Length: 286
Image (cartoon, rainbow, N blue to C red):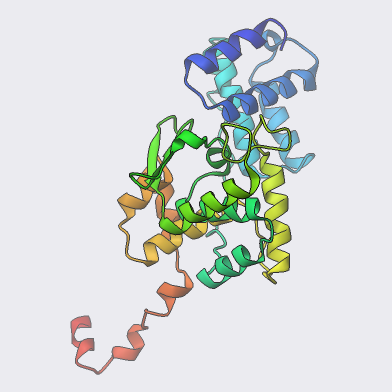
């Protein structure tokens, strides 16, 4: 990146990008420049297309990952270098949209019960009980817990907007038990081993996979799956879509509608139109 590195970092700060997003953008921009071994000033559309194809066909990265790399280059060329024409004909990679896997309520309960470590159980409980992203949870501080109003303050979010989520009595009780048992010497609710830095996402995913195996859950479980479960279960309990959008911190309602997919609880309440043909109810079909 050379002379452009510091400017791009400053541009990201000025743009209000989340720390994790900024780090990803810088990483992919450096990788792009290093791939060709030339200054970014000497690279253009042809090199971008070549690199994107290489990521897809040789590195075999997922479309979502490649799209993140493309976004980083779009920022580099458009904002930092002032050359938006470079990215004008570079499309996002189309990806197949699949309904996310969802844990049932029973599976969530089994997962929590299988978490023998109280810190891990507290982490999983907060993730499921609030729908927080892992990065948001790991950034929680003690002052973010408002036991008087029974809410959690979520800061430094992906969208850039702070929000408030509900702190349930069961969650608060477990957090108090965890705090009493561990007495973390940190402002962070869930510090890492050093005590002054948060846990890593990798550590949380590793812990949840172990608990899932212990609980006999065969689905591919990762920490973000608890966010999926929260959103889906909230909708199944009758919460309106707009409220779920706010709780999840989605900027666009379209990001929330993915959770309106056909889940087990909804499937059981549906009837085929075949079953009402020739009946009183079937008259509304004409």
